[in-house]
Length: 89
Image 1: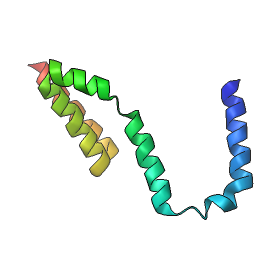
Image 2: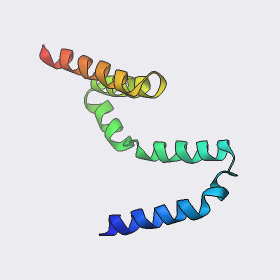
Image 3: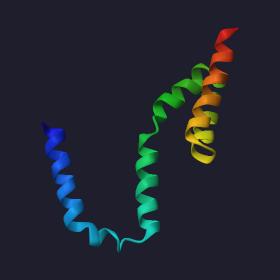
C-alpha cells in the first residue's frame, strides 16, 4: 500500500511541478544521479571480496566498468562469461 501511495504522490508532483523541473540545469541533475549511483555501490562487499579473492573483485570491477562505459548488457554478458570460465575449471 505504501508503494501505491508513494507512486501516486510522485505522479502528482511530476505533473504539477514539471515546468519547474525543466529549469534545473543538466549539471545539477547529473550530480544528483552520480551521487545516487555511488550510494548504490556496496563498498563493504567490494572490500570484503578484495580481501577474500582479488580476481573475483577484479571481475566485479571490470564488469561494472564495461556496464558504465561500454554497454550494460554487453558488460553483464562479458562479466558473466569470465565468471563462468573461471569457475568451470
